[in-house]
Amino acid sequence: MDLKHSASGAVESGDNYIATSKSTDMITPKEKEIKANKASNAPVEGYKVYARRWAVLILFVFYSASNAMQWIQYTIINNIITRYYGISDKWVDWTSMIYMILYIPLIFPGSWFLDKVGLRITALVGIVGTCIGAWIKVFSVDPSLFYVSFIGQAIVALAQVCILSLPARLAAVWFGPDQVSSATSVGVFGNQLGVAIGFVLPPMLVPNSESLETVGKDLQMMFYLVAGLTSILLVLMVLFFQDKPPTPPSAAQETSQRLEGNAEQQVSFMQSLKNLMTNRNFIFLLLSYGINVGVFYAISTLLNPVVLKYYPGHEVDTGRIGLSIVLAGMLGSVVSGIVLDKTHKFKETTLAVYALSMVGMWIFTFTLDTGHIAVVYLTASLLGFFMTGYLPVGFEFGAELTFPEPEGTSSGLLNASAQTFGICFTLFYSELFYSYGDVPANVAMAVMLIVGTLITAATGSDLRRQNAQVVSANARASNAAGSSAGGGVDNSVAVNP
Image (cartoon, rainbow, N blue to C red):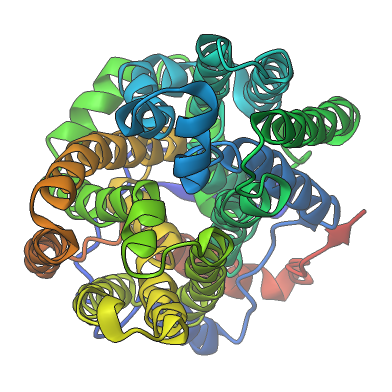
């Protein structure tokens, strides 16, 4: 590869080909970079990271949460919604599944849109849709107006297309190589935060009252609260959410931006899709990721009837158990991101988290009927730590396996797989639960996780993005050594406001 040093201190490549990594994770690319560094006694860093990246990331977290909190808004108070609107359990389940169904056909245009217009415009379209859908729900508080509420929910579901693919892209665009995994974890944290709020807030704001008029007033208050929050976030996003920093934060991102700006070297969206769909390891990841997240979606959607079967009248506890799952998952996400940034052992981390998710599912299955709801809190938290903690791990492993394809496209496909499996598993889980009980339904999900663990074990460790960093590190070390006689090169990392 023809590599040279630019005037800004960044590595430029004369060739758009990034060799695939042959790393087996026994010797990580990071370790290779350190060895190259020591060999020349020259630092390899030279890319600027900007302090404002944290403001952009935190704003995205709340934006993502405002959408995700509405996903489970109805199903967590299933029994109250069915009584107020006079509808069946299935219709309430559909308020959750509409998120999954609408995402699948829109993932390809959504990924194309992200690649064409960038982070800012995509995020603004998403927050506008989320805000509009939330306000429509305000006008649905009447037993005969469930269809209005469903329309609002569908619009919010459409807006998630402009959210779910962004964490990996935002992290790659704004953060350096030693922070990108942690930043992705924090980005996914936003979705989990929203789900957590969606679990705990509706049971608190809309208690199970005998009076339908009281239920209606409580629903009105909840809808106004969500609509007001999304309106505030819309203003903040317009004012402060930025597309990208003035300069790339890493060699991998510089390569991606150069390819995007070069019409001759730029790969078309369809060619990028073809590259992804012919990548054997990425196909394995699509299947395993979809299975894991699909199981989480199914359990979350039917958590209310499953818990109330053993603990009648514990609607608030149901929400808090859901909250425990997601809070534990947030912690798991952060821990996983830190582990990835420190070790760069993507395959080992992914497999370990997946296998422990499967173990957690078996424990959860056979502890529901102990008669002690505290046990359910504990086992649900254990399940959540690994199952939802897996989300950013899957995103980052996908970005490694598919570099230099756009992160938004790879993460979008992973989300599409999750939504597809989520629909299938939710319908399957619901049918088993209402026909045969919770144990067969949960065992079926645990078996699916065994299959996913085996697929993960069969996935190769082809770390292309890490390999690009190694190539850049070696070239920079060589250039630094060669220029030392002429006064050296300033390779320090600058953090700008």
